Length: 184
Image (cartoon, rainbow, N blue to C red):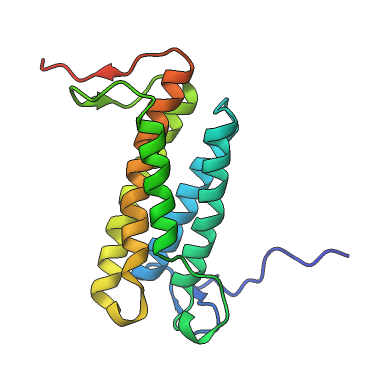
């Protein structure tokens, strides 16, 4: 017999933190976690389209890192538990990806409209979800700054930049030009 997926413990609008108290599902910490979950799902959707091996590998790595980020946020005191945490090296890896992929793209001369191939459109949408996660994290950091590493904020900030570059790269590799914003 398989264990049940449902527990009924959230039926009254609360959820449990990892090794912590139960909190309202509308609390800032849970808003961040829900947005990270949405971002990860959107990245999964983008991976179901043709990204190519290099971009797919980056996105898969990011999906795993988002789980680490979520675990850290869902744990009231992650420093006391022996759990993986995002570090500056993870932000550095995103920057390295951005720099490497940007070298293969035409220089930016105007704002780019989201879209292009289905994969690129999904990645642009993932970028906007990432920016929302970043904003939700800023709200949470104001509430509990001592509990959460600012590396997580830097990670989400850089990830949004990477998703923009990856969307452009996905279009470029499909021989689809960026759509430039034009003043109406």
